Length: 171
Ligand SMILES: Cc1cc2nc3c(=O)[nH]c(=O)nc-3n(C[C@H](O)[C@H](O)[C@H](O)COP(=O)(O)O)c2cc1C
Image 1 (tube, protein in one colour):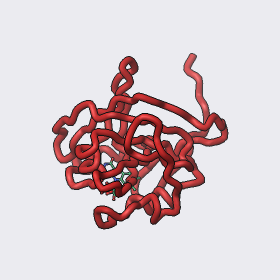
Image 2 (tube, helix red, strand yellow):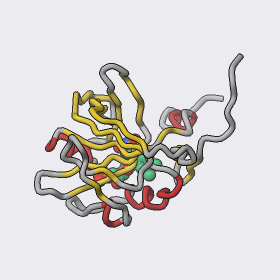
Image 3 (cartoon, protein in one colour):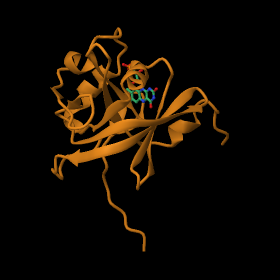
Image 4 (cartoon, protein in one colour):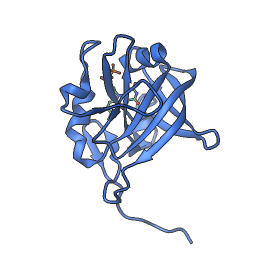
């Protein structure tokens, strides 16, 4: 079966979904979900996230040079969905969604307390990637809340998400 070239990526699912939190020069915070995400280097630790050029997240990353990748668990699915809604620049999705901002350790962007893991990142590079821009971030701190039952949310498509389930071993 031939796949529609505007929909092929839907077969590359479920995808890890993260909440990227940022701040602008005036101190306005922001958060948005992203599922075009991948690790690209271990040492140094580098993560890649593909963003449409109009995202407020991207503008804040360019302005401040940093961002936090928050890994959401099941408990904050509805808040993640709220963060994906278009709000005017300067209005914080973190506050609108009822999530809690926490000061990060090494970057100006805030962390989201309710996440299950956090990567504090400094902007390394920006690469043209078609209709998305690929942001490369150096992870300078990575932490998790250490609770095994907290599995990361995966995005299937549209409003559908799942959690990691059956473990298979290759032998
Ligand atoms: C589950 C999910 C995954 C998303 N993944 C991406 C993505 O990888 N890249 C992107 O540019 N937008 C993605 N979006 C859309 C943005 O999150 C959405 O446009 C958001 O309002 C952008 O907020 P901002 O303008 O404050 O950055 C995704 C939305 C959802 C709900």
